[in-house]
Image 1 (cartoon, one colour):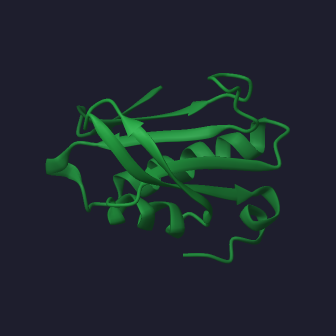
Image 2 (cartoon, rainbow, N blue to C red):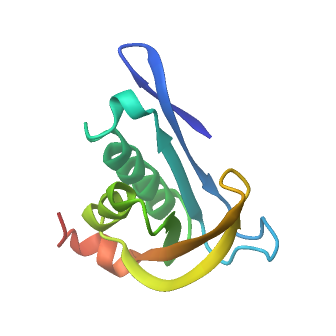
Image 3 (spheres, one colour):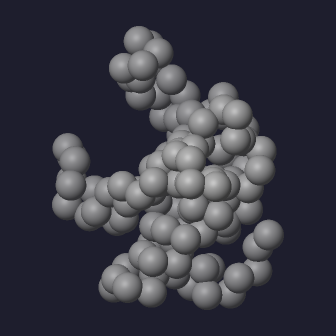
Length: 120
């Protein structure tokens, strides 16, 4: 996990869950990120995601990077779309924080698509 800072202040976090971790084991690197509410809509999440994606594709032998977002979080969906991710599936998952089932969308970015840079 990496700290996301602005002017020396912690404003969020971002990280990569590695293949083989989790239950069931992940088959690809999977991103996670958050930005504190006062700092949202300033491009910090997009910058963090782009940095993690670059690190995944430039330092590891991987063909695809994944991420998932709750469907009712359009800002996070847009971050992934701006970074070249495409939706691959949708499902319900239990959210501990919300204490209920939540509609979730998984996104993937392939190495081939990343190399084209043909997105936002």
